[in-house]
Amino acid sequence: MTIEWTTAAWFLPFVLPIVIWVSWSDMASMKIPNKAVLALLVVFAVIGLVALPFTEYLWRWSHFAVVLAIGFVLSALNLVGAGDAKFAAAMAPFIALPDGMPFMYILGATVIAAFLLHRWARRSSIRERHPDWESWTRREFPMGFALAPALMFYLLIGLSKAL
Image (spheres, rainbow, N blue to C red):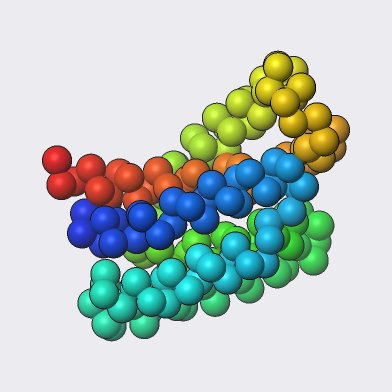
């Protein structure tokens, strides 16, 4: 992957609380708060200026626009939730273009793991601790529970290059 460890090191401390927030919120309410999406965009807007060369920083905003447009269409077709589409768009600038396919592998593995973990958790004592979580009873899967960790894993893999 092409992400520099220094870039990952700049982003990760600010992204980590947001991905926890998104995962928790989507599990609890099956909604990703717009404030979380905006917070992620603000992190990229501010930290990206320090973490990336300026021309790359500017180009990465196009990732946001493209993923937002695709997400809008998918949401209009009821294939993904609007919150999932917005959060995916907010994640997009963090991913280097050459890392698109490796990120898709990370996302695929994360979706499978999150789905299995969610289905196991709703049959375990975890459900007793959080009985009011909407994701326990809905047929739909809380994709924020997979999208958010995928971004975290991508940045952690980038950070591991420093080792």
